[in-house]
Length: 184
Image 1 (cartoon, one colour):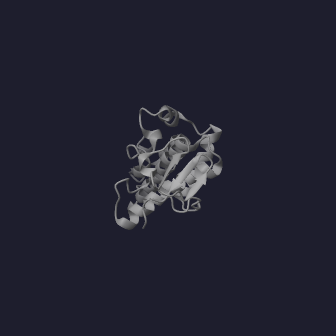
Image 2: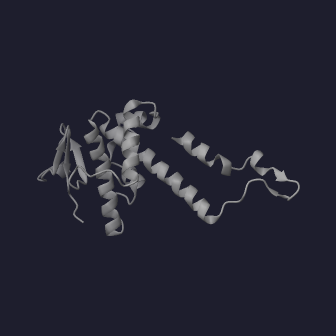
Image 3: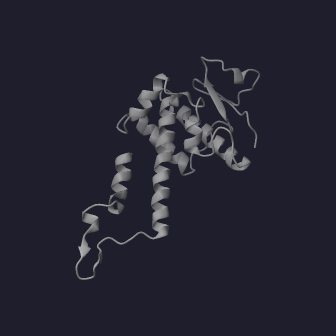
């Protein structure tokens, strides 16, 4: 993913080749970026980061789940982002990267979690991660349907977190149980 970003930005990066001077016009051979072009590059770069972080979150949390389970993890992240947007901000983060990497929300990002090293080193050539990247792209561009009925939380069926006691699940997908704990 990062190599695609570098390849995309290469014409705009400072280099000897990009700094050659046209001796007839005494102007740089590469045109300067307009503010709109610069903003588009920054927006594209940020979107690629969102896709990468979301894909790694899906991979860390649900790589052993079927596609519907992976999509459900992405849906929980998007539901949290939507709630933060509606409320102006929220404690669990306000954007995809903030929500995914908020400490102790998605355990795969905790440095002591067994999945952490794996999610930080996985490559797009890994078939499960490639699937996570496709799901994350669909989520970031807004075409992934929410298959969780608006869930904001979930846990694996082999654990019983304190926050789930007395709560009613809104969906069960494979080994994950989903809850909608925050209304908009």
